[in-house]
Length: 347
Ligand code: NCD
Ligand code: ZN
Image (cartoon, rainbow, N blue to C red; front, side, top):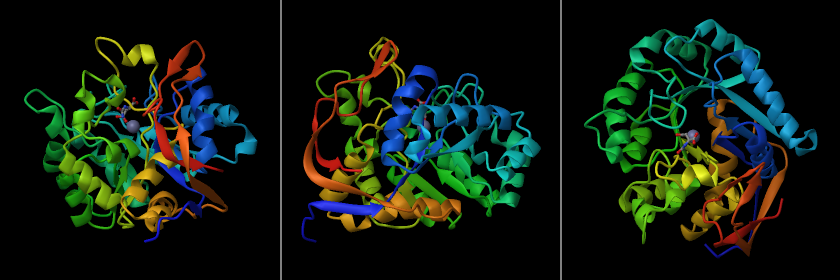
């Protein structure tokens, strides 16, 4: 394919974001709203978003942060706990407050302590989701003594996700932020009810980046980046155009002070230049013609939503990534801060 210098696609969506709350929300939500028409908003606040009323109030704070002129729609999620109430979840879906339910295995990642301790405790809720066609979004990692951090996703597929797909063949499942070749293979082999999101950072770095010349906290996220062969498999899946793979940045801002410390938080902040990062990958893979499927079409098709009206354009132009974004009294550092990207978002 001849190297294009401009790319216009249907307005895209981000199917996995962390917008936080308060000053950070005010700083980061407009960045996502600038590039995306809709975003699936993760519920791992403290305390987590577990009720329709709390989700409604959070949605209002997000809309206040972005302003109505942004034309942005936050798609809210319900944090699944051991004691989740299927009726409350179903009501939220019916009232179009909740777009999906989020499963965090307890202690798997940031603010997941209220997560599910044993998947069997939520089988009743999952049966209900299957019945009403409500998607389950899965943080696919098994944690526990004896499980290597780099094997968490693979073990989750074997012990939890595989059996889950068999038990609930009609349940729509998004395997979030996949990081391994095993996950790509699993999703491909699974029924059409199973899809996956892929982050920009997992397409760009492998685990060596975390240790290059010293420990690099801004490349630390969960699931942690894996081997080069995994990154290559993720790239092939993302640029394939296949309906099962779509864009979900997992942009996860943390204050620089919480990242650069003895026990730093997991999360990579990509909202500043999300589309530029992905466009660079698709360009490198000679697959710009598949970018619209990945960014704008496959996600809505899976969720059963219409594609967005309007378009966005990216051009091939050097784009510096800022060092920091101010968020109240804190700063957050973007992925690839101070580096220069090869595509620019024009709007
Ligand atoms: C996320 C966060 O900071 O909330 N962190 C991350 O490393 N991705 C949580 C998550 O999505 O796992
Ligand atoms: Zn996330």
